[in-house]
Image (cartoon, rainbow, N blue to C red; front, side, top):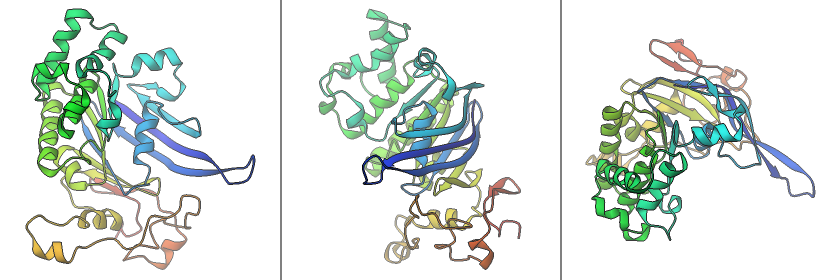
Length: 319
């Protein structure tokens, strides 16, 4: 359904001197596959390149970004599509749910009109047929049909996020990209939205690429997980297995267990910060923060090594 081949994203930013620019690598050679009907989770700290991948999939990156590699959507390269074909693919073949629903919705237009817009643009429905489809979509995401007359400010955060999911479903796409759709929600509403996403995947057979820094959220929804660090994949494997890469293990342990006073009072975090993309360390980029780093890690840039049903970029995987 979706295949990334050596995808790279580099941002050109001003270096502070007139006419001078610096290149900041955000995504470095990511190759990944997503099967039809599969849910894949993409995890990592802030700045690891997750959102850059999400935006690159539908060519939503700013003009300052230079993209390399290939993004094959059902066998067709998104990066080389002509503008007319790209507009036809967006919403109808693949759609995206952004992190902030408040910023993704037009504050001066009613919810129903915004959900109907992709239907009208892609000539799938108009007039009474579009209104009926909007009501159907709202009910699918757990909102009453009369909410179509509401404005975004009249809805709660969880309701606005449900509207964003309804918009993503409007044209019955094969793929939905969800970029941290529950980060701004409280725990109760987050659980409701996650339950909704799981149900929609099961009911409609949709492929899902879900992005989050919270591994527990991804494991609750996804079949497989891919973990990123400093713009590269460091581990890929089943969502219900044990992590092998030290970074994945530290990321999973950084979240306290609800109701456990030991993890609350003495959380197992990860020391330090991610590296500056313009000054990446040699060898394994994680070795300055790695608690089990070897001398060879400072000079050896390890690619993904397969071990059983998982692949991890760590010299210890083979052992």
